Amino acid sequence: MSEWIFFDCFNTLIDDFDPSGDESGLGTLPELAVELGAARDRNQFLAAYRRACPVDSGDYAEVLFTQRLATAVASMGRLPQDSQGKVLQRLLDHWHAEYEPSLRLTPGTTEMLAHWHGARRLGVVSNFYLPGYPRRYLERFGIAHYFDFVLDSASCGHRKPGALIFEMALRSASCAPTDVLYVGDRPDLDLEPAHRQGMAVLHLDRSSVRPNTAKTPAGFRAVRHWDEFRIDRS
Image 1: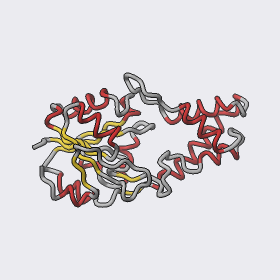
Image 2: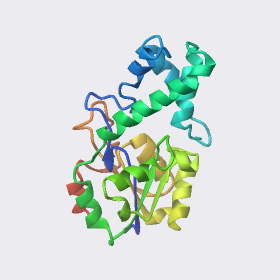
Image 3: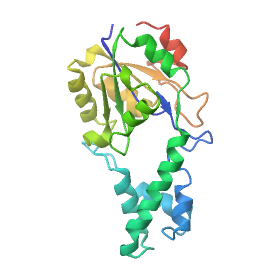
Image 4: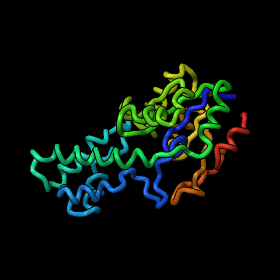
């Protein structure tokens, strides 16, 4: 029986996926980039943004959202250098205004956390490209107090599926991998790397409500709704 439960944050505790299937988190940012003259069209912006995103490496270093946008805008070469800062601020302001209202609790999250609080110690291990934002959003929804720690990739400098962020989480909890049940929605970022660390894992399978989402790999346990996890005391 695990002493700790580590949760992924986004699309596990807090949903940010677009029902259309777009999970980039960019919303209408590409269109604004075109309007401001930073990009020729949506596709050019998306291609430049993807090139600015972190690539797989041994340490899986995180690249902050501000740096991704700055690199993307500069690489398209459509704006004078002295105007890029103002455009970047417009893009960031627009993203905040659009992204944050789109967030909502994953169905059943509050009840599930209340159920496990006190029975297990709880932590969050999250990828996010702005430091401290996972905690900020957990606080916004009134659930941050359930967690002993919240570790995000922008704050610690390393992202899942790399081993370093999981090792940092274990140090935050002062526990061994065998003391942890790790719960997340992504087999590639959550289940498989946590399993390699020696943790027990559980998949929150969202494939019934999220287009193009991976189903549970063979050999892994899964639940489709938090109600199922509340009755699973293992």
